[in-house]
Length: 185
Ligand SMILES: [Zn+2]
Ligand SMILES: [Zn+2]
Image (cartoon, rainbow, N blue to C red; front, side):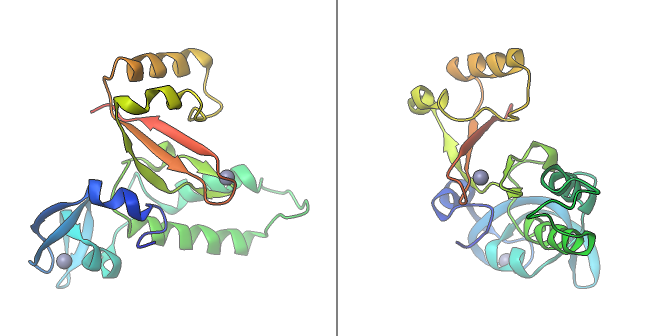
């Protein structure tokens, strides 16, 4: 996969043909919307080609930062827990740093990391947007967030069935579970 958190088959849907803001080549570019260091200066970059994205120095921000990744990991490895399969503080920090680095170099799918589904102690790769034809299957997908109240789940499903908002799907490479979230435009 070109990006750890986006399946290859979902990429064409995210790309537009444009001049890259960094290398100026006309090619497939992806949404970013973050501060990038270009020629020694921080610049707000809305779109970038995959090559530039993978090599860029990108700043963490209020939506995508180490604390958010650590909160996700704490969910799987609670603080002060030394049960089997747990990891220590240094390992957790290293894992969080690696995940953040990967996410910063991923086209922007959801702005806030707290919205991104996670499973098996990692974020779940985005596997594409779905349209109306997919709705029958949607109800079999796991709701996200899984712990949400039923009313919110129902409201989301109702708006999906009415076709009001695009639906993003995610599938976990470890356990095969699928997740979706509704992205109001
Ligand atoms: Zn470029
Ligand atoms: Zn999983």
